[in-house]
Image (cartoon, protein in one colour):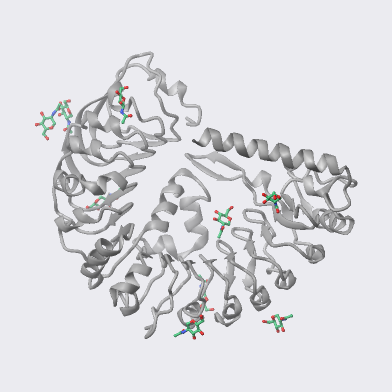
Length: 505
Ligand SMILES: *[C@@H]1O[C@H](CO)[C@@H](O)[C@H](O)[C@H]1NC(C)=O
Ligand SMILES: *[C@@H]1O[C@H](CO)[C@@H](O)[C@H](O)[C@H]1NC(C)=O
Ligand SMILES: *[C@@H]1O[C@H](CO)[C@@H](O)[C@H](O)[C@H]1NC(C)=O
Ligand SMILES: *[C@@H]1O[C@H](CO)[C@@H](O)[C@H](O)[C@H]1NC(C)=O
Ligand SMILES: *[C@@H]1O[C@H](CO)[C@@H](O)[C@H](O)[C@H]1NC(C)=O
Ligand SMILES: *[C@@H]1O[C@H](CO)[C@@H](O)[C@H](O)[C@H]1NC(C)=O
Ligand SMILES: *[C@@H]1O[C@H](CO)[C@@H](O)[C@H](O)[C@H]1NC(C)=O
Ligand SMILES: *[C@@H]1O[C@H](CO)[C@@H](O)[C@H](O)[C@H]1NC(C)=O
Ligand SMILES: *[C@@H]1O[C@H](CO)[C@@H](O)[C@H](O)[C@H]1NC(C)=O
């Protein structure tokens, strides 16, 4: 199926190319002179140590330059995507590679790109200046991404003039706003990511967000929000992701507008809220970044969890449960909130759950019981199962093999005893397997790993396991993180580690 599709697309491209040859002219195809010059001026203000803009040459067809997309018919530049895609590996995680950052300032020549609708500059370094006000005049923008670009200061209100915006990402900078009024004209906005923007003065955030009729994703993680205002009428008809993680609300319960009428909850399936489990960690952006890095494997986990995480306050849990069942919510997260001490059997009917994230919840339950609850329909869809710091005990059972869709299994820091079941090898999608600080014993053998081709993070630190594999074993996976502390690996250096090209010793 997909082969056919790819082939068809390929033919289609050939068709398009050959048409452009037949036309033989570049009157309307290819680059417009004044726009090429604008790009060259834009380039002049940037250092480009990794030569990402090597194709940006005087005289060339700028529609073919790296990061540029032109309109097929008019030749106008409609996309400028210079996000820094490169990552590098350091101390067991991936980071954005500083050497492939563009460094410098944003030249106002962008204003000459009258048809620009997509501007992506994330992960570059604009050296601690304010976001230029003129960006608010690139009036056709639909997509603006300045995530992690070292901008500081107040978000310029003229950005609110970009009335066509569908997606605005200003996350991971050193920014603040005084209020949300400037956003109120962005009625097409679907995605808004202001993570790490200091919103402590923007007490109108919810009121204004509530007037944005198209909003699908609202990410306000680590925004110094302290108060969840009441909302008498909720307008969030499309919202599916609300990320309030790392905000430290004084009112501990998610208010009525979240878990009031079931209808609303159906529209608000993902309430992401990591209540500061580590205040020191969330206190400072710089330190937080140091802990998590930019884009690395661990952060993939964190990101996924943040994306899917749903935190419901004490009063919300039962409503959430009902709503999840009724309205096929996909994610449930209950981190650091009061929670009854057992996962209720009724959760077995939440067949669409994709993420279960329970952190800091004081569950006292046998892991076999939890597997049992989820081993029906839940196990078929579930991608992330994170149960941290509870007092879970007992044995892993063969039911672990039911979770065929599992990407992440994190059962760290428990009292789980005994053997690791062989059916682990049925989890062919598993990427992160994190079982440290348990009391697992017995042997892990090649058979356990035979289908784990995607495995990338593997930790069984501080158990009492023996890893017993043939001397010439070549594992099916490439790890970026490995934790075998306190494991018995035999008296010889494990040869198979040599096959792990991504793992740096
Ligand atoms: C260019 O034209 C093709 C065929 O009409 C279309 O599929 C494609 O999306 C167009 N690209 C742009 C950037 O407009
Ligand atoms: C902005 O860019 C970053 C990095 O490329 C990406 O992870 C993020 O998803 C983008 N934001 C939006 C809203 O597309
Ligand atoms: C742009 O926004 C600023 C501040 O929000 C406002 O004063 C100005 O009139 C706006 N300009 C246009 C052209 O809408
Ligand atoms: C956020 O802004 C408030 C008010 O301007 C300020 O008191 C606070 O220190 C800021 N927080 C950070 C982490 O900069
Ligand atoms: C709901 O959204 C509309 C715009 O779509 C706005 O006019 C109205 O004031 C909003 N209602 C509330 C209660 O915010
Ligand atoms: C493990 O749990 C104990 C208490 O349950 C806690 O004190 C300890 O910090 C946890 N360790 C890790 C690495 O999370
Ligand atoms: C796992 O590997 C075994 C042996 O190679 C194979 O028979 C089985 O079908 C695989 N299972 C999955 C789920 O991939
Ligand atoms: C694993 O530990 C349990 C006690 O926790 C013990 O009964 C069992 O014999 C051990 N198994 C192995 C293979 O060491
Ligand atoms: C670990 O397991 C071995 C047997 O495999 C046993 O002799 C030893 O006492 C165990 N250690 C702990 C700390 O349970």
